[in-house]
Length: 217
Image 1 (cartoon, one colour):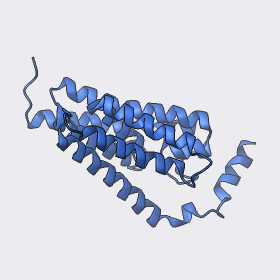
Image 2 (tube, helix red, strand yellow):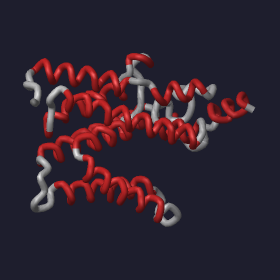
Image 3 (tube, one colour):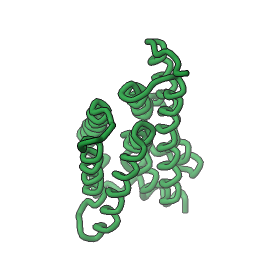
C-alpha cells in the first residue's frame, strides 16, 4: 500500500535528502589525506577537486559516495510514497544540501555527481544508458577533443532527452524537464562561482598546490 502523500511528506523527504546531500564527503576524504579542499584547487568540495588535489583514487571514492548520497535520498523518498515528478523535490533538496552543507559552514561543491545519483533513482535505465554513452565518448575522444568530459556530458544529455521523450516512452516529461532544470541550475551555480572567484582558476597560480605538495613531501 502506497503511503498518502501530503505536504508533510514532501517536507520530510526534502529534509532527509538535504541531509544526505550535505554529508561533506570530499571535505572529509581530503582531511583524512591531509588536505583542506577549501584551500586548494577550485576551493570546492567535489570529486573533481579531490581527484586533482588529493589523488585519483580518492577522487573515485568521493564520486561513488556522492552518487550514492543522491540515490539514497531518492530511495528514501520512494519509501515515503513519492513517485515520478514528485521525486524532483528531494532531488533538488539533495543538490542544495551539497551546495550549502551546514557541516562545512554552508560551503560545498557543484553537485553534478549528486544529481547523477538522484537521476538514477528516478529513471534508472535511461540514466544508466545515457551515462554509458557519454562515458564511452569521453574515453574514446580523450586525445582528440580539448574537453572530452564536456562533450561526453553533452552527448549523454542528448541521449537522455532522446530516450526519455521518444515515442512510446513511459517517462513523465515533467521529470525530464525537472531534471534538466536542476542541471541548468548547477551549471549557473558553477558559472557564478567561477566568475566570482576567477583567481582560483588562473593557470599560473600554483602557490597553494605547490605548498601542499611540499608539505606532504
